[in-house]
Image 1 (cartoon, rainbow, N blue to C red):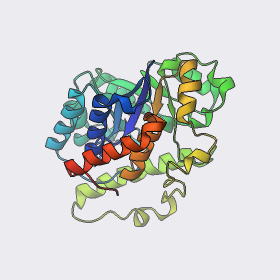
Image 2: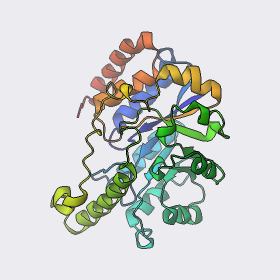
Image 3: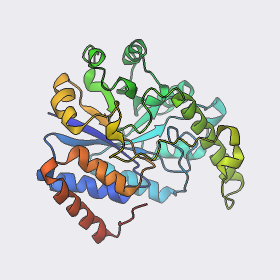
Length: 312
């Protein structure tokens, strides 16, 4: 049995994720049967090609190399969230994004894609990367998902409005290559979700262009585009809040329903979530329920000893 989790934010949550990966390896008794880390996903900000979540900040080349090395040495791929839906051909030459692909181009790492323009470029220029089709495409119909599964993707992330529609899920082919987002904070069947992803994509481009011109001037998103200022009221939902949503997939359901059906890829969202919420979510899904409190105590001890106790 393999229950493979894709976890968020290899850059901003580097220390937490590294400690959690080592804890999973060294204390398997804390964890559910078959639980493993399939990848850590994210980008090294600032990143023009980033999508799905707006991400600020700044990282240098040495940090990029260190993060790639530490996770890859543990056998864990990084997946770049290059899911910006607003990209044009002129954006493909972005020096920083190409640097990320160059530094991680060792055959282990992966890219999540949503833009056909960028996907064609990566397939041509960086063929060693495995490609994942992003949930940002909003493929929420059976026919759209089936068509995507016919294409040459390593993994296809299903739209999470399909999460608990078992009459559909049961009939899907290639279940082991379908990734299910288990803890979506978005309102089920939200009519604005695709537009929200497009707004975020444009905001990310604007942010990156701004800091190139004015590196010492803060970027004011509301001032940049007050008509398309994406401030989703549901984006701060905690692990406790999302359990009430019909798109929620519980850990019990993963092991008792989805894995027996043939699914093995599960995504935990949370790139912009607090450290505390990430910890609770990781342990909710991956730790044995009866050992969750002990596992939390153990992980917090590792963080305290490493100087990584930040709960922002």
